[in-house]
Image 1: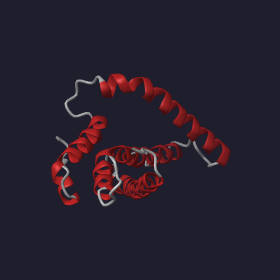
Image 2: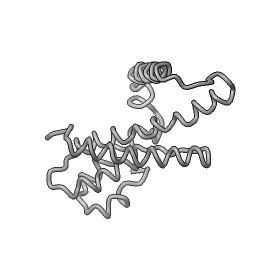
Image 3: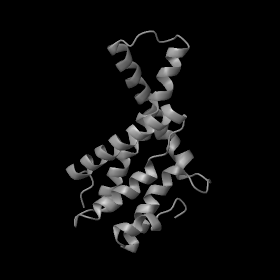
Image 4: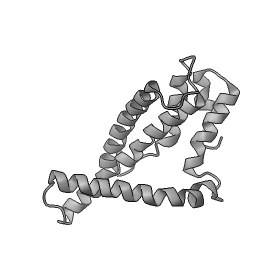
Length: 157
């Protein structure tokens, strides 16, 4: 079973584009964004069911790519704040690129060791990171039509 396919990457990129635009709009309009992992998992399951060769591993990579939309849209809160307090007067390209790269590297460096403590071994009843795989497994096991996936996969599945 192939996990990283061209179809999965393109589908993940399209969902990321839509979710990032929606999150940026909502964040700037009402100051609130939504978590993208569970909706991305459900939408990718529904779309991949249309193909005979869609697998749960491919759904996992689509959901992982699309869940980056929540992270990408977080910039709408950081940069305006820095501009408003006067710490960022201009936007030089190289300084911006290096700052964003440093933030991404630090984010990965902190998230990798904290994953076991906050996600895998967590006592929380509904941690956000454990829901999409459980929804994918339940939809795969039930083998229902795409219109039933949204019913079969509420946040408490």
